[in-house]
Length: 346
View 1 (spheres, rainbow, N blue to C red):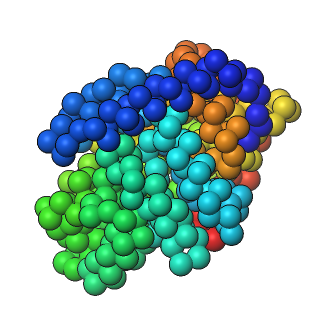
View 2: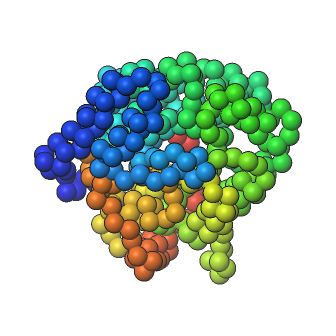
């Protein structure tokens, strides 16, 4: 990510002081004071929060994604990785997102676990389960809980919904039934589904089942991309996550989570068909989402993202249309090929 307008010392100290005050208060409260602590934390943080759909939980508009970008920067340097996650939480980026298959032997979940073991009340944590059958899901969840050093997951997602899976996953002994059970047992507070490349399949899934949240690829270049495999048909109005899935999710009051807002870096640049990171994030935040998950690799990047979130101003419809038109014409095909086969697992 290009780093511009680095956070000033004054802004940095302001964010850090607010987070530190909330953390100190949280450590002095008992379990019965969670609501009071949460209210105080939200008041202190300079990063805006939004309600995560029907969950009713307020979350920061930016979360820390621990996919391949984070892994490639810090694999083999665990202390550095954990310190970066702590710094994000200090600055109000207290939604940590990971997955069972991120990193060798669950490396990413283990790094998040190092934070949760001392700061569980401060962090909203998401993990994703890749397998589809009851036995495999329960096995993975048990392992993930151990790695994360917690007894519950705030949001558990079906990892990467594929084409024609809606019917299969609703059958007895598959993901939907299993996720319902995990939510009933309070192993997962909330359940959801994610996908990189299946807008219509995800629309069918969320209309059919009672899930709380949905995570999808949303960026300024993908408005005209369709499924399956993000094949293009420029002569028609192509379905996209933004066009067909977001409205379906809003109709059911689901928490909407954006990912791939920077196109995994492919949309960054100074040429006319590229954009700066702040503009791409502003576009995503201007959509009716609760939060955007962003991979981060350095303290400087965390500070800059916190600053952009804290000073966010919504784009006008005209600005969004201009940016989308400019980026989509030359970037759709590249993103189509990349995301149809991309994995954050490493």
